[in-house]
Amino acid sequence: MVGNINNNLLLKVTNTWRRHSSDVERSMERLATGKRINRASDDPAGSVAVTDMNGQLETLKSQLKGVQQTRYYVAAREGGNAAINDIVIELKGLVVQAGNSGALSDSERRTIQDQIDLKIEAIDFVSNTFTYKGERVFSSALSTSLGSMSREIEVTDPNDPTKKTKKTEQLSLRSLKSGGALNTLTGDLELADKVVDAAVAGNSGEQAFLGSQQRDLDSRERSLQAEIENVTGTKSQIEDTDYASEVANLVKGQVLQQASMFMVQTAMQQIKQITSLIAAVAPGGPASVGTGRSLNVVG
Image (cartoon, rainbow, N blue to C red; front, side, top):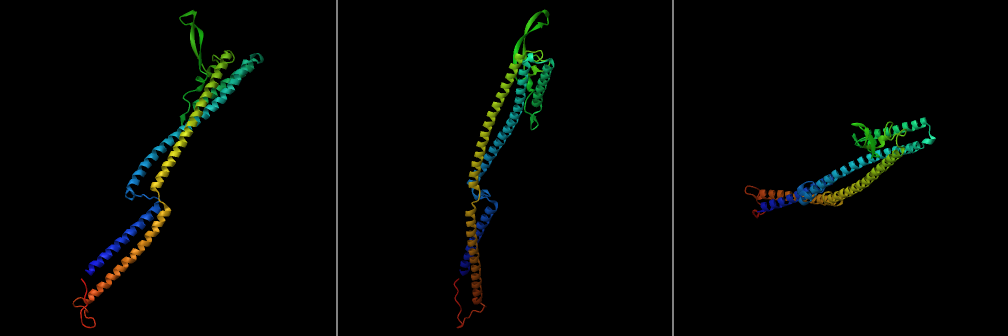
């Protein structure tokens, strides 16, 4: 019976030591990883919540990346439009200057037309070569679309040279180039001025649209960033280690671990002493004590 009691005592103190050792190991792991939940068994409900939030964060980050890419593209296009707008405004000045035909010599008018040709070629060069991440920002040469309008003109009927027929002619900034219907040497300067005004208005409208889109994208980006911060903060509260609390738990666990180890050592010493005593009074052993009577041992 004494053996059973001591074995039970040893088992209890050993289990106590193992439990406190496990607590110490868990605290050290949490302090080392910075996470309170390192496996599902640490907090099943919290683990499920963290997994859901990780999926939510991935979705939000993907959306944020898409918004940022779109914003960069819009910013690139806005920069291209700004460059084209400067050229169109310079073109407006040249058309107005060409309209003062009475004060200009033929060579001066020719020089103005050459400058207009260069401006239109510059617009097409920008719109054809301006790229973002290797892709063109503008779908076509803008001189064919900026200032676009139409007019009706009379042309000779190809079936009857004696007759005239009406035809719709499409005009744009390209019409101002040498040989075009609105060149400043032989074309309609008043209509050329209207085409340039329409081009200025159209490009300005595009810039306003891009500016509005950029503002909306900035707002969307800030909203997504705030949402990511909120989800990350909530996830951190569930998953991350509270260092002050965990250090306190570690110290407490180490103290209890040392105390239980002392109890284990004490229990083992007691068992050793009782075993020696039992061996001393067992049959065949040194059983007599002083008077020759046997020592009574409960068991």
